Length: 255
Image 1: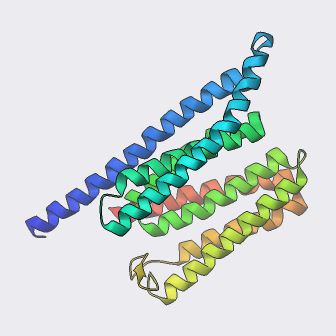
Image 2: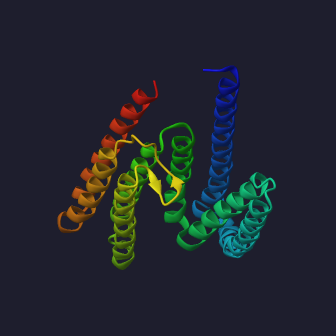
Image 3: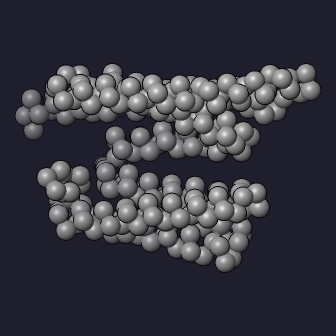
């Protein structure tokens, strides 16, 4: 490998690592934000009732402010890309306010249950970012499908006796997303890693793990409803084990 190629590769690796660190730094800040909401908005004492009510009222307003800022950031990013300028700051702005909107909206809407979900969702998003930047793109698609299945299993166990129709909607949305991922995998395989003119996966990518991830996720959805919470728990453990095995497989491939 020539010196110029080594330097270019090192620069790309440093950029990827810096972006992963930004994701994890943002996740830590969001977790602290959620910790404050949980302490003063969910697990409050009798002297903090008014404070707790005020926190959730603030979150409902703050969510829409963040949504407007995120939309402005996306427009800024699109304009910067079109003009050929630096789009990274605009992308960071859009991502930060989008994350704040999602956290504020979910916590403000579902309160304690929403905070519990976000406690897990935020680090999961950071791990997915790590996989996207440091691992093969195939592993990212595998992990994304597994993450969707885990979310559906978690929602079933937490919400089935609270709001059955919400669980139905979540299962339907997750099922459609996984089917879309499977169709995308098939299209990528036919195009040898390309979607149209865009290179998404390497030419010699292994598509079997992508199909297995989608099949396992769909199977988890199909068997959970007739068999109940116990099946959801077993499927959750099964998907975690599958993701761990996939992580080992793709880590070995990096070596």
